[in-house]
Amino acid sequence: MLAQRLPGILPPMALDDALASAALQGLATQGFDAASWQRRPFRSPHHSASAVALVGGGSPPRPGEISLAHGGVLFLDELPEFPRSALEALREPLETGRITISRAAHQAQFPARFQFVAAMNPCPCGWLGAAVPGRHCRCTPDQVARYQGRLSGPLLDRIDLRVEVQAVPPEQQMALPDGEPSPVVAARVAEARDRQLRRQGRPNAELDAAEIDARCRCDSAAAAFLQNAARRLGWSGRRLHRTLKVARTVADLAEADEIGVAHMAEALQAQRAL
Amino acid sequence: MSLAVVISRALDGLDAPEVRVEVQLANGLPSFTLVGLADTEVRESRERVRAALQQSGFTFPHNRRITVNLAPAELPKESGRFDLPIALGILAAAEVFDAARLQGFEFAGELSLAGELRPVRGAMALALAMRRSGATRTLVLPHESAAAAALVPGLAVRAAGHLTEVVQALQSGEGETVLTAALPPPAANAATSDDLRDVKGQRRPSARSRSPPRAATACC
Image: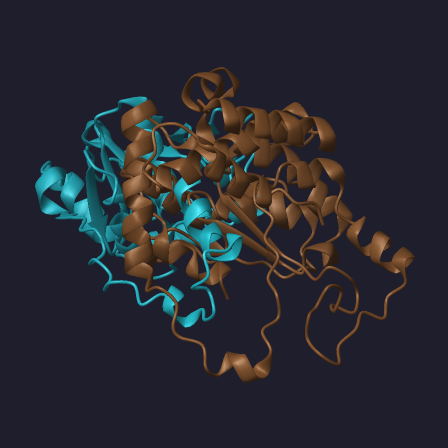
């Protein structure tokens, strides 16, 4: 439900991105729908999708879901249910924003810069860690480990934010107030994105390793916090850099010039492993 | 012996390299041969083009040896997009209009047996490739394809509905003005997409309520 609402708060598409996205949609079977011009795509393939359907392929090479989601959102619901080969095929595009499809007679390169959103249950029965009375997880530790193990380390390493969504008890669900409307959130997002473009000419997600050091300055407390966590949790360089970029984004949303402890804490909170 | 060349484009991933459709009419046993690594759909062009030319009131050169080459030879060609260029090449080689009038144009479109133009896949990729190549030609496409291609700024795109429209424009020598200018599709209404307001229970400043804005800000 949250994932479907993500395109509604994303900043408007630049013309070049919109042209690339429309051209890619035009190559797919359904073709380009004029109603979707300059609207960020939202793709949510079923978990029976093969690796080729997801990243592209065939002869002649055609774009896959990741390219059809270029400039928009790729949502994979029930992530562990996807074939392992399909999930592992996502690794390079998540890192580079491109996919090169090689066949014996032909190679083709397609852009694939998308926002990856995935959803999953923590265990096969779905009730691990639930605080709902009367509901207990009935999986053995081995079952849980095997289920969570369907997502490889390198794939998880490329996911910037992990968020646990708790079940809401029914008596509370009816009484809850509405959330913030999308236009309000979208305005905040656009403002933070403008800060990034003014500061470095591109969004935080596109900063490379050299720029991260320059652009993601932390105050001493935040830096110490990050180093401590990275050492204790045995993080890879990629994990460290991605956490810095998330912290920089949190600071942008808070309109702060330097990354402080509160921003770093929020970024670290979102790195919790399964 | 007469030779005519029509410029078109093939799809190669997201790129659309130029294809020269060369049509030669020679004396000899009547035949209609198509070469150039053409896929099944392209080879079927011969039937569609023959019927479309006859239905549109043109004389098909039955008694000539027709050779169509889609250059470059090592680039795979697919779909019915070459129907229109092939038909125009045959008419130009048969001197129904001056082959020099084909200069400055690029054509693509599938033909129905009645001669109507049908949309092609990847029209926008064609337009983007033409823009990238810096060529200042006019792109002539079927109506729906032309509407998509017209979204690319800075290009001359013309739309046509029938083979005879294109031929008349080329015969008159004023192809630029005679064919209708392609118009981009009308702007869609403001998207009535899902609203975050429907997601309840997120007022607490928890990681959960902050992640959609964070993801939205950092991406793309």
